[in-house]
Length: 154
Image (cartoon, rainbow, N blue to C red; front, side):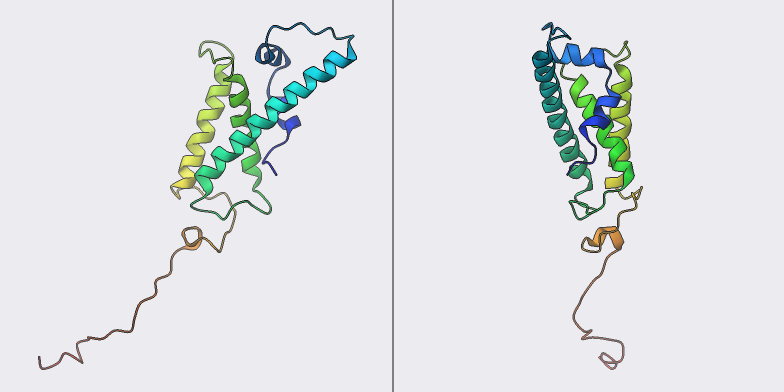
């Protein structure tokens, strides 16, 4: 289960960018079969972009949380959409002087946030009792052999 859906990501990426991502192949909007094939290609690309985005997110979260989440925090949906959209747009290159820079800025913000989560500076509100770093730490040791009282007189 991904953190976001195909529709979430489609809403973030502009339609004219999908034309550039798929290539310069002309598709007649009256040709239902061609439009269906185009939609399948777009969905396939988005699925791959989401899978890559979720794997990247999991890489940052794996040391602090037990994955996969049973009920993922809502904040992960936003960052999964941002990273997936960046993954799609970066297929054709990102022009930092153009509107595409928005995708790069969103990606950089997501990575900065995830880095802070990985460092333990931000908590995403997911509790994982199986991972000690998420809830503190515990130390076990043997009973004390030497003490002031047992060493008195030496």
